[in-house]
Image (tube, rainbow, N blue to C red; front, side, top):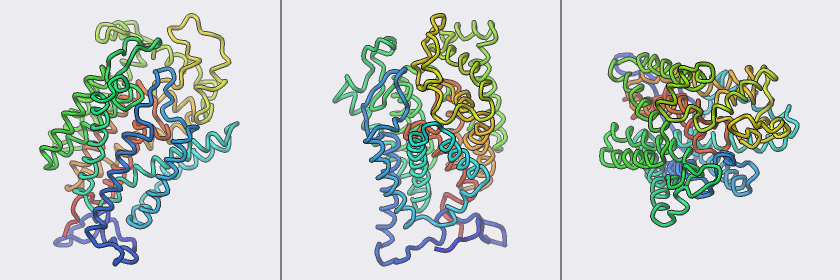
Length: 456
């Protein structure tokens, strides 16, 4: 395989972006026929998507106060994801072009690698953090592989359909075959969730957002010509989302769609980006702003019937009080919640929740600053949110990339809004983190290569 230029000459000398898999051949072409090569790539991509959406331990349930979002100490997760990492590494070596790997050498990704390495070195328990980082990197690698292994966009669409269908069959099948596992039962910590759907996921707060992403896949397939399959995926994901009872996710879902469709409506990516920034400011005001404004607090109580966001306001107040203690480098990756930094504090009798036994602060932005400080946190926020916005604007300049760029950006918009209520950054094999990084890589590649059919 030899690297090629990001763009090649088109008709009349005009630049035409090269395909992601342009000029790709095996070292020994006779080993696999072109048809087998294509089927192998689709199957591996679909398998990776199913693995990210279903995990290695479906129907393993926890409550809101004990859900770790990916347990790095679990033997099944360690061995299973290490094995998956080896499989996808070998697949990428055989089926992916070197130009794709070269595109990852951007300042932001390099700085992120430095931040992760430094987090391992400075932690008082580097072995535990190293295991978590390795699982996180493997998950990111699988997410990246899903996009680059298929030969073209149509093959990627088949992989998305197969992976999403597998997750939907697992969750809906659970409702029929093991309803006691696929629905919330009585929980002393969360009795209000009894009867709500969660499928094969650990909690409705994970099931709802992931089903939202699956519905976004369906919408993309519907727009790309797979009308029946896309409609089925979209409706199945949407119905399940509504049955989880997640009010905020149900609200963010249509909002994310409307924001991204602004680019199509006005013919400019800047329209969607401006709408996205305004939505972020609005949600920030309604969540963190409620800590400082009685008027906003009353508005939330009128709209949602719960001005504390199910106790999250207590966690946000506590997080904001602790960030100034280590403002520049933070407490360390995975080194705040569920550690002595919180366990050894006095029992907060006056607060709604005992935050000593909460595993994360239910706010991505605050938890990033708690763990990595303003220096490392700024790098991660750039990679997760700012960089994808810039890449979206670039990707929409490539005509054949517009629909898939809209899909990836829709996921970014949704995850950015959800980040005010949930934490999933660098969360090992957590489906929310994997779907987010899948969209990050998708926009990164869509800004540099044609993900559709190569122009001739």
